[in-house]
Image 1 (cartoon, rainbow, N blue to C red):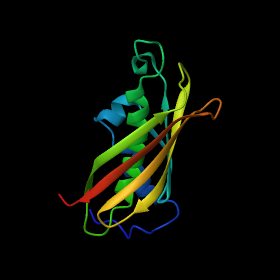
Image 2 (cartoon, rainbow, N blue to C red):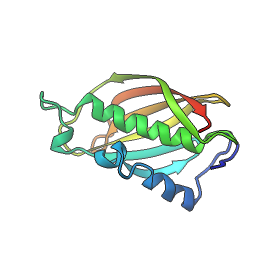
Image 3 (cartoon, rainbow, N blue to C red):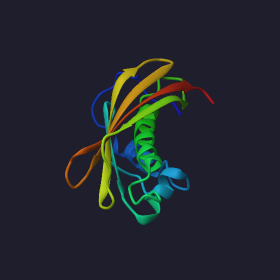
Image 4 (cartoon, rainbow, N blue to C red):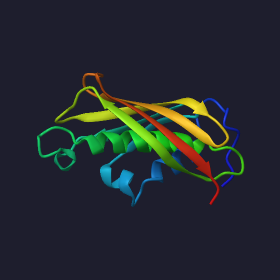
Length: 148
């Protein structure tokens, strides 16, 4: 699929929003329950309801749940920002600092670009408790653009 130039700004088209919303169906993001809220080329917002199966044995939200939400959000942002002629990417590095946790409710992630280059993109994902708006994780990933 041919996309657009990586410096494009503003909201995505309704058709692209629908594509993104269905992108995780039958895959980990769909299983986890990741929902797309808004999608702009320079800012992507997703959310996730906290369910018992996403909680770690210690009773707190599992770190992998937070990472899955952040990585998915940054991944969707990468995908819509792929340069012309490239149609895939892979994560080559990720890091997460956990600042808090939740036991119930919902969390959301806002992905913003640090670098949108021809061969790599770097995205920050700020994960928050939806009820209090308190940040619970600072996530950063580097993705390599590919052609299938």
